[in-house]
Length: 307
Image (cartoon, rainbow, N blue to C red; front, side, top):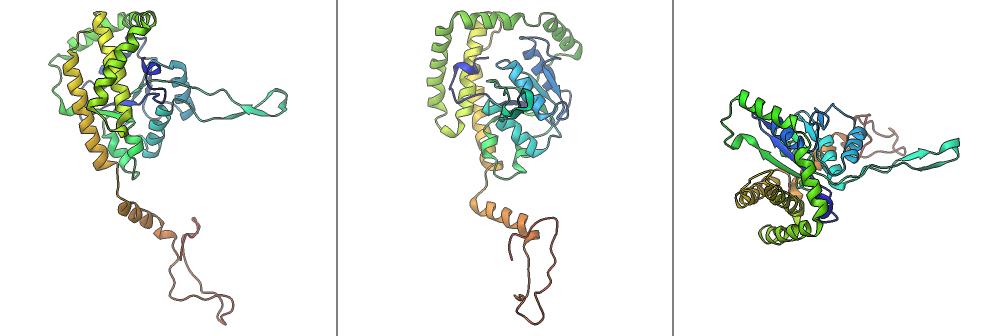
């Protein structure tokens, strides 16, 4: 919601709640947050097959600054997830051409834009999915992943959770309306709060490589301070801030270990990938040789890259 008021280069990132165990409340947690702004059912894309790339972009463009949920991306392809992380952080879809009326030519089609941080849930480690593509540090720092298995969860019974969620559902949109009205009416104050948190976070997370983490934390801490002021929430801001710093430190270690490779490893990966397309021969003949050019075998589906 506050993303447009932050760094102009920051358009959002993916906030993922993951864990190998089912029924830990990943989706329920995200839905509870979405109900603040509207109907969580309509603000959810279910599974990686639930929408095409263009439909996802159109949905983000429609919601613009209000988050929604990519639910259950456990089996998403690494290339597709990498593209999703990049697309979200860019805040706009690719330019497309359209034919003008009367077939008189082409022009740029209307493109969707957004500035938001969608929720993601999955039963697998999304950093590992990215790591399967090699050096994916750039995409990995566009993902905040909270691995829910490592935290102690609420002792609420299933019936208690169901009752609480039904009450939230019956009051959908109420909290978001009050929040949005406050931000619009007190813009100068909101910007001052963001500047205050920005100064503190930049001191504790100085590495420019993690600027997306910083930008997201500024928006999040400002939002929590506002909702506390409105009596919508009652968070301990210092405790949340410490949690965020610990999480950022953990994420930085994960990105460094899983999603960053050395130049030597990169070269080895390249040679391994290209080796089926390298022609190996025991001599070098051409048409001037009486026996003619030598015959070689290689995978005809791919053009040779070396000899």
